[in-house]
Image 1: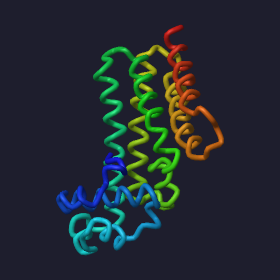
Image 2: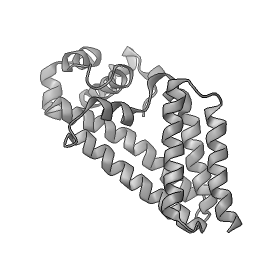
Image 3: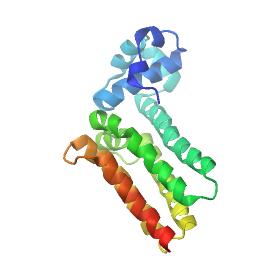
Image 4: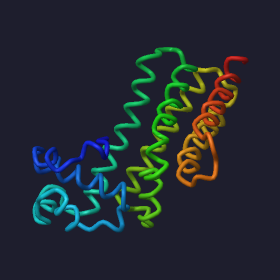
Length: 200
C-alpha cells in the first residue's frame, strides 16, 4: 500500500490513469472514509474525469472494492512472508505476523483500520467490499488456525481467535487512544499464545 508521504502531485502525474485513480482513491478513502468521498473528489485528486473513473471501474462501489484488494494483498503478503521466512517454525510465523501488526500500529493511530472503517460505512452485507472483507478475514483466520495447529495448541480454533481478537483489538485501541503501549501489550499477548504451544 502506498504511503501518504509518497503521494505527491508530481508522482501522481507520472502514473497510468488507472493507477492514478487508485492512488487518489486510497488517500481520500483512508483519510476521509469511503462514504464521504465522492467520485468527483477522486477525479480532481487524480487529475482526471468522472467519466474516466467509470470507464476504468464501472462504479464507485467497484472502486472501493478494488482499493481494498490492495489492502488485502498487503496482509496476505505478510502471512506469505512469515511462512516463507520460517518454514515449519509455527512459533516464529505467528511472531512475524504479530510484528507486522505492531509495525503498522502508528498508521492506525490517526487513520484507523481500513477494513473496520469501511464496514462501518457500508451497512449492506451484500456490498462487494463487505464480501471482500469477510472473505479475507475468514482466510486470515484459517491461516492463523493452521499456525496454531502446527504449534501444537490443544485448541487451535481458540488460539486463532485469541490472536485475532488481540491483533484487531490493538488496531482499534491505538486509534481510540485509551490504552498506552499497545504494541508492547500485543507482543506479550502473542508470546503468551506461542508459549502455551511450546510448553505443550
